Amino acid sequence: MTFLRLSRGHVIAAVAALVLLAVMAMDWYTTEEGEDARRTEQITGDPASGPQGDIDREVLESSSTLAELNEDNAWEASEAADRIVLLMLLATIALAIAAAALRAADRRTPGPLAASTLAAGVAAVTALAVAIRIIDVGGSEVGGEVEVGAPFALLALGILAFGAARAARTERAERESARTQLA
Image (cartoon, one colour):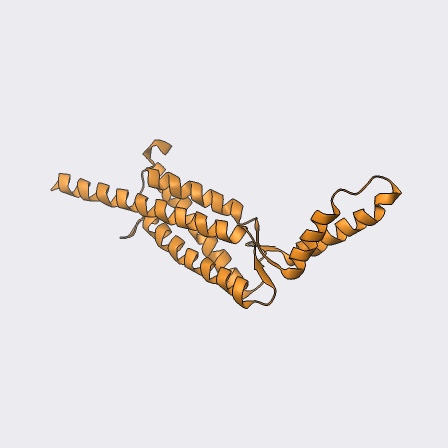
């Protein structure tokens, strides 16, 4: 097993998969109440030391707690749609990493589709699902606000799909070249 076998597409897809995994821990959605609580936190600032800062500390703590209760990331899937998106994200990450690992081990997936081809297709479908969920939360849900994690996830999925498609193209060209040399 050597990472020198990885094409640029495999590297791009694998790195994007790891970034996506990190982005899944960022806040994706919040509510108006959560936004107000974060604003209160910012306005309150650092409380003064001693007894005069007790009220500010209490306001800061309750605002932080309220904001956390109203914010969700990809791992905190509560609705069925969010759980489906979570499973799709995990499948995308697994396929991209598997494609890179198989390439590094100089192995092929059984069947007509390479792992990188599957990763590209699943990433594209997952990006569509995330985009629909962003539109749904931002436009349809009462009080729903989209946080920075969801658009970053969409960007990471796009990069992952690009890298996986490029890797699949490289693998296909190599297979065709091998067939031509054998004939």
